[in-house]
Amino acid sequence: MGTLEEKKLVVEQVKEKLNKSQSVVILENRGLTVAQATALRAKLRAADVDLKILKNTLVKIAADELGLSGLDDYLQGPTAWAFCMQDPVSGPKILTEYAKTNDKIAVRGGILEKKAISAQGVKDLADLPPREVLLAQVLGAMQSPLVGMANVLQGPIRKFGYALEALRKAKEEA
Image 1 (cartoon, rainbow, N blue to C red):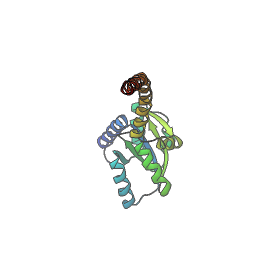
Image 2 (cartoon, one colour):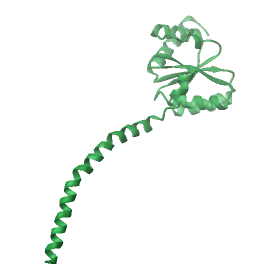
Image 3 (cartoon, rainbow, N blue to C red):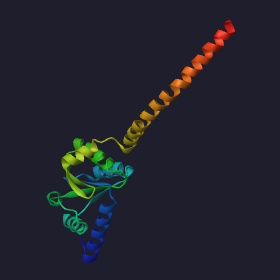
């Protein structure tokens, strides 16, 4: 990497990405081919995840300036960083699945809510359902009591309707 100014610029960019990210996945990069990296980046881009290969020393400076601790264990060897901008689950899900079928990358850990998490934490995050499913589950849980209450409130009205119908039939027969 070039001059001190260029390094400062990279540190600022990393700080901005760390601040804006919903989650970050830290990967051990064992030499993806250009084709593999391009295919992975395309998948990640569709989920608004930005994959970057960054110098560990510059990431450490950015993390220290932001007060992020616990990353030292993950800053060893060739490291790739996936910044998940849209939601905290999509990036871990894609990368965990990809790591299962490709031995060129491995999930080392991550960052969630400005705290370092282990590789297992990233895998647990990947196992969560997508945001839309969670919202549907919450909505279903909220609707259930309302539907039950509507049925209970309709009961007396229904019974009154049955009574009127029975009275109408009795008058017709008489």
